[in-house]
Structure formats: C-alpha cells, structure tokens
Amino acid sequence: MVHPEQSPLGREVAYPRHYDASLLFPIPRAAARAELGLGADLPFAGHDRWHAYELSWLDARGKPRVATATITVPATTPHLVESKSLKLYLNAFNATRFDEAGDVRTRIARDLSQAAGGEVAVDFGLPAFDDAAAEPIDALDVAIERYGPPDAALLAADGGDLVEETLRSDLLKSNCPVTGQPDWATVRIAYRGPRLDRAALLRYLVSFRDHAEFHEQCVERIFVDVLARCRPDTLSVEARYTRRGGLDINPWRATPGRSPPPAGRDLRQ
Image 1: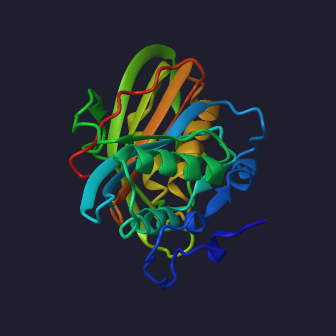
Image 2 (image 1 turned 180 degrees about the vertical axis):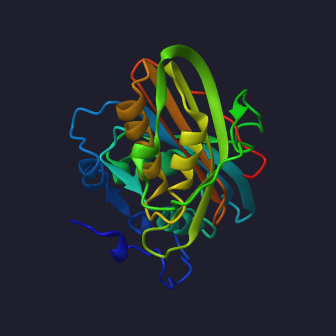
C-alpha cells in the first residue's frame, strides 16, 4: 500500500523543469472508507471538483500561454490525487510546448484519469463566484469544548419535524494528515428529513478542528455521520476549501439520485 508519507507532501521537492506525468501521486480511497465502515457498495454519489488558478505552457513558437481549469474527479474512482503532487504536475507544463491549447487539456485529462483510475473531466475556466442560498448557523450562541476527533454523537435531529433546507457553516477546519497544516472550508449541508439540531451540528463540525484527514475524507465522514445519526431521506454535503498552492478542492457527496449543486466558488477561494 502507498502511504501519504511517501508523497511529495511536506518534503522539499525540486521544481519540475519538464512535463512528467509520474509526478502525480494517487492515494487509495479504500483504507479511509473502511474506517467509516464503507466497502465497494458506496452510500453516496459525488465528485471532487478542483479549481486550478496557475496553469501555463508554451505554444508551438515558445510563447507562454496561461489559463485556469476546472478538474472533476468522480468519487467512484479508486484513488484520490494528493494535492501537492497535482500542483507539481501542473507546474511541469510551464516549459513544455504544445501545438494547441486543446492538447494541454487532453493531456491533463488523460494523466489524471490514469492516476485516479476513472474518467476525469478537465475544462478550461472556472465557475463564477456565487452565494448559494443557505441558512448560516455560525452565529448560534453555543459553548464548544470538543475540537477532535470528530464526534458523531454530538449530532441530533427532531424526528417529529420534517423539513427541507440547506445549512451553511464557515467554521470547518481540519489538518493535513502529513504536514499538520490547517485546511479551511465552507460546508453546505442540504437535506430533506428530520430537522437537524443546528447547535448540535455546529458543535459536530467544530469537532474536526484538530482532526487530521484529507479534504475528501472529511466530507465523506460528515456525510456518513449525518446520514447514520439523523436519518434524512436525502442528503448532500459540499465543502469548498480555500486555495493552497494555486489549487482549491470542492468535494461533494450525496445520496444517489440527488442532483449536484451548481458549480461555484466562495469569496474565500
């Protein structure tokens, strides 16, 4: 098994001078999912949407070109791609010549699909900033004492009050499992079913504060915990993480059949 400690994450790595697909470092999803009691039959659909802000290459005559890109990795792929390796890989295009911009997009899609183990979509451009309708819960006057590990027992719902709503918190913070560096995100939880206890949900989300786990794994943990403890009929969990190294990631997990939220960016990104 390949461990995150073997990746470029947290180590000094020489700046890549030439295109090199081997820079991509895939991490199996199975081990983290097994900790949540998940096997091959996943209870969710979803994707990991990356926004790349620093993409450049040379055209056929050596003139630099720049672009942004949106990369969508299905949650069903057997591997996630470690973020620093993705940054190094994209930087490796800086001194590489391509005849057409489309060749760059095709090459990135091919390499990421091979690393992730499934079809990855790559499009130039970024989604617009948006402020999707959601009720903020961060202003609740609550006392909080638990900052890790995440505690699903904090969650609660009122089975006698069925609602459909979307809640939002900007207080999700976790840490990189290799370097210990903080990861910050806004999380949106949309559901239909027993009304979630908002104070309990806020305490639960803050219990990730000292927790070390990759972004995608945190979102899957939130999804699994809310689904098991609160029993919603449908559930969608999306986290929009702030940018690091010219990349941000937006994992989304939802009960099968639920439409994905419109692609968008938060102002913090």
